Image 1 (cartoon, rainbow, N blue to C red):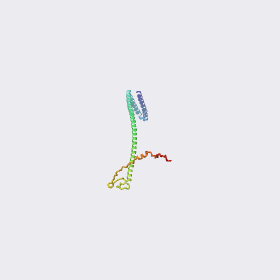
Image 2 (tube, rainbow, N blue to C red; image 1 turned 30 degrees about the vertical axis):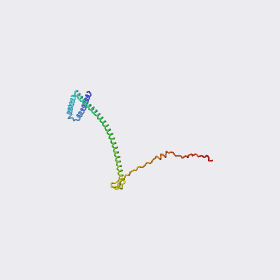
Image 3 (cartoon, rainbow, N blue to C red; image 1 turned 30 degrees about the horizontal axis):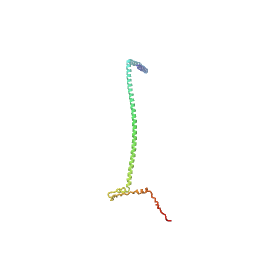
Image 4 (cartoon, rainbow, N blue to C red; image 1 turned 90 degrees about the horizontal axis):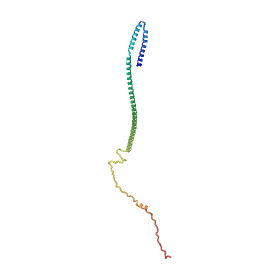
Length: 205
């Protein structure tokens, strides 16, 4: 309350001090013929201002101070709500940043898998091309210098061929016996010995 009253008083004093030199300069700049009229007008305006200042009572000042306090309270509430909203927006911004980082990581992984799949597809296509080229080359080698109906050399027999398939009855081949060989191997060798025949020599002398 006291601060507000002092402020109003200072503003009033300042306005009065500013107005006085201007009016004085006006009276100095005017010619001598109109000096009395100018002084009279200045006195009237000064009296009106003093009457307006006298109309400001303590209740009016208190009412104005209360209105300013109410506006200040409203501004503080608005600032508080704005600070809360700013904090919420910052938190939401942090969450969105983390989500962006996560999505960037997933996009990088998908790109890497896509590159690997493309390389695998290219290798498969190269293998298929080589296989097709090898098959074509083999066909060219097999059919080189042969007419379209000549299939000799591939064990192909046409329908008009007069040759017939003859089946020969198979004969059994006797297996060699191993028994004599085994007997000869295990039979011990026979040794020839001279038989002793006694001879009588009595009466021969």
